[in-house]
Length: 126
Image 1 (cartoon, rainbow, N blue to C red):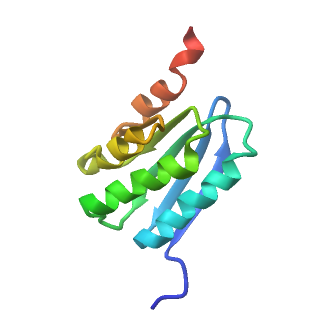
Image 2 (cartoon, rainbow, N blue to C red):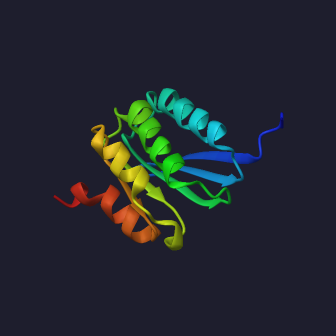
Image 3 (cartoon, rainbow, N blue to C red):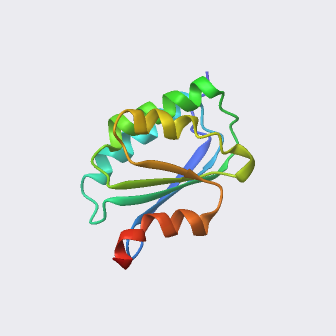
């Protein structure tokens, strides 16, 4: 059993949304715990939109694990207006997105950062 975390998390407040950057090789339980803690932390954020950049995560998650990640996002981040999950294009499966959306959380998975940001701020143009 490893005792040290194998990943880093950075949280930045940007103009219209928050940016959470995760890098390294988190185990599933570590990632689920991090999502839960983000849920607590995000209650204090000024913005209710977040870009979660997972492009630096090297852990290969199975489809059932991706589903579990989506369920945790829905449980912990349901108070957020929009959650854009940014992953390498070859890792876009939409499994976590479907799990989160099924539970009422507005999550979209993107393989392109510009598209993710455009979706997050789309209602600002109205």
